[in-house]
Length: 74
Image (tube, rainbow, N blue to C red; front, side):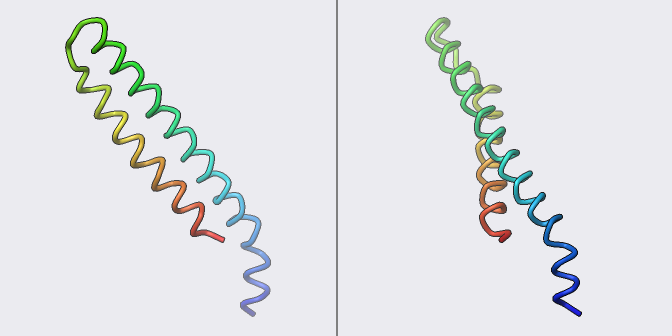
């Protein structure tokens, strides 16, 4: 019974794993963009762009969480 259930859910789990990988990579790319913008604002104006840095940190944590979940779901 469990083998038949695993065979039916395997494609869905594989799709969720690949989706988690894509979301994790997208979050990390967003984080890099936010940090670059925050650094550029700081260099040009001398004012620390706190909102961009916070969004970068949150995106980094979500990206790492998504990639960890993708690694755990096998």
